[in-house]
Image (cartoon, rainbow, N blue to C red; front, side):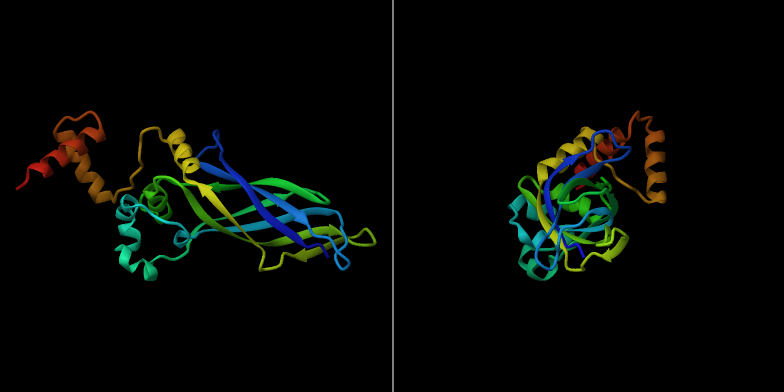
Length: 218
């Protein structure tokens, strides 16, 4: 039966997607040996779970301040910083024999109610440690040429350090000089009434006036 290795070789933004997406370049290699002769892989129905590993990098004081909402005070991070689920995705891998390379698409959001968005936005530079866990089904040619089916071993995984700049450039492409905020309906209605009552042309102007009022409150 075939035995596959997985390695992430890079990451890039998809500039013409309907919504923000990153693509991880994944290389699949078929192991060979006395007990694992090389065979033709017809296809792979691949499932990939992507997790953030925030405990595997250092943070500047400014980043620590922005991450307070997620992890609390830095002195407690040994208890509060844990792996975060980012995405689950599925992709079909076409036929190959020795190795092949595919793009694994990851839908992204700029919604600041989502923990991963808060985490990405807090980072100034450097890399984001990722752990990718793989599962799925391999369809391959048996010794007699017939179609065989095999499950991917549950311990298959890969590590990758995603450059923070890749994520920032992607969001700047889709939301130039913007941030996206989701409000509860009653809060939105109150903000909308304030905007209409003051004859304000934009939401930004309404928020600027509210912040200015807050600044002069003793």
